[in-house]
Figure 1 (cartoon, helix red, strand yellow):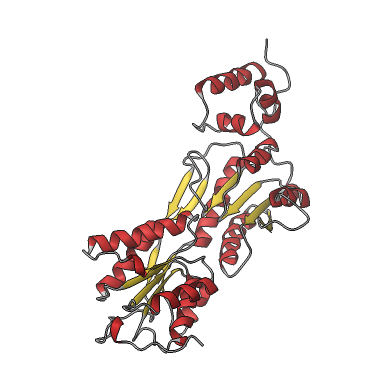
Figure 2 (figure 1 turned 90 degrees about the horizontal axis):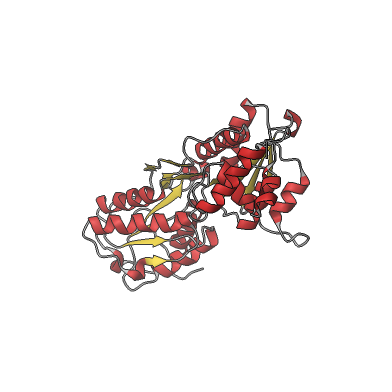
Length: 350
């Protein structure tokens, strides 16, 4: 059969090949997670019929949709700033929604796509798109990029993240260098890739310093202030409590601040605290928080640039970008007091 005058879209190629639109999208974007037989079938159809990539229709449809797992706190604001920086240069509109489903809709992504025209693509933040959602986007030929993905995005899936393992390592090393040996950690949720990487960095730093990791000093959190408060209370009520806490995000660090105050402990005289993110309000905490800076705005800007490349029909030079983190030392960390953890008094929880 000769090449037809009108090239086919991804959806039409998928129908002819008898595979999903997501599979065809992987082939045309050079991703590897496709069997050789399927890849050969799709490539043969493209040779015979041609392939028509849907381009941006007009600047009026030039919407970059930013989809959050949840719209809470200062974290989303920093992400939106980064997207806006690039979108403004290209005269694009930024739409914002969250993946947390509402009572009236089963699939929140479908709701986001229905509410406004998506002319450029989707940036999904601290989430993981299901295979069904990825197929939705591929079927409509809408490119997407993950920012701070909640789990391993898989080979070939465009994503931007921070150096979470190195950040956990650096935060813990800072406390070790100050002389702390009883260092507690408040993790994020187990499903979160960032939480697991920061915990691994913490453990590596202890191991490199010859300090045995005490399982009692690990408290599971949820990246929320309330969770940090509860986790810090568990740590500080131990018979031999920590002299320092590494909270794996700034919200949980603020929870640790409140727990310390309720127990009559001073920061940093009785307890050192390190956070992670360096959200703008942290410099105004009392005392100002030592934390690991995660370049959220830069991550979002990089993701938006990647999205524009994909929307223009071009291949990405690399599908996965990781930006460096940086320890910001302020006033919430100091050498442990001479009394140590076991010499402190514990007040009521208030």
